[in-house]
Length: 357
Ligand SMILES: Cc1cc2nc3c(=O)[nH]c(=O)nc-3n(C[C@H](O)[C@H](O)[C@H](O)COP(=O)(O)OP(=O)(O)OC[C@H]3O[C@@H](n4cnc5c(N)ncnc54)[C@H](O)[C@@H]3O)c2cc1C
Image 1 (cartoon, protein in one colour):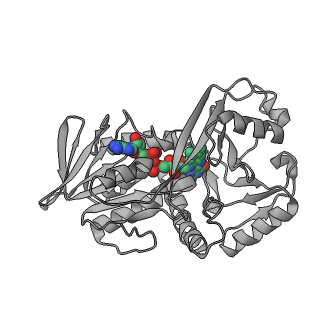
Image 2 (tube, rainbow, N blue to C red; image 1 turned 90 degrees about the vertical axis):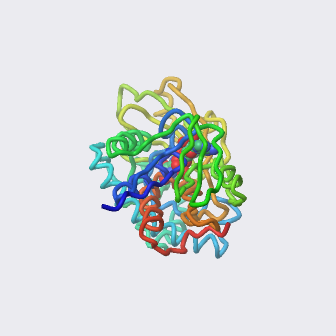
């Protein structure tokens, strides 16, 4: 019997975990290496939970209208639609609770909502205008009925347990890892051990460029910060939204999880109080009923310049990247994992998310 191929995945966030998931499902042996002490401790720690193909356009203000950004949005939407279906199935298999479908997005005016609806319709994204603004705190909004949501970190934990049960090896606390080329692949020195493989997938989020630079491969990736504040649910659940609500102006969202209410997001925001202030303005009746946050968090999104992730080989045979998902990493994780695993194991050729470095 042929021995299973061994593949190293650097990064145990949503992207690395989902890549490992498909690699193992297709017969490979996987070692995941991460600088932190457990899964989803990086950007995947506290996101807004939206599985939203509707938001596939780049958020970079200067990229939105360029041809490159529009092309990127088309291919990213297609991947997001595939990924959403895979992710919802995977969540179900892992026994995670089903959530109400749809996301809303508050727009500054009804005209802005109609304009956004036209753009989305062009991209093939079903978009309605909210006719009962009580759902959006009395403000004009678009509704994306095909979007969904779920707790990304809970998914990451459940998937990491499932991977371990299926034979994945996890090497945590691998801060300051070293990587070098060998005669037949790569050797990684991390957490006091050396691990070798013909194939290495770099899925280390904002840490990816530094790892690739050790092999003289240059990755152009921006870090865009965002923040989150979690609140205990109010005793009186009256008026809580049934699906996540985004605010186009602040690029943030209000999401109700099983045990908490979260405001999160922001473009370049490092202070969660900015988001709390904005949501208190949008929904004063709700925010005045909440106690102080139970926790706050700041993270950085790994963002490619035009919003198209890098899911690709590199100039070095056997070295792969799966990163740059920006504000879309939860939405895209399952589809990106599938795509990269097929490239590595089955030789799939797909240049939509190619990386030139
Ligand atoms: C506030 C906020 C809200 C968001 N909301 C949404 C949303 O609603 N929907 C959506 O689709 N997306 C959302 N996102 C985006 C999404 O969370 C990210 O795209 C996704 O988490 C990125 O996953 P990742 O696996 O690439 O990175 P990470 O989760 O950061 O994983 C990378 C891993 O690599 C490890 N690592 C890094 N460097 C090294 C190194 N040198 N050696 C070893 N290990 C290393 C890190 O420790 C980390 O565990 C949001 C992001 C933010 C910040």
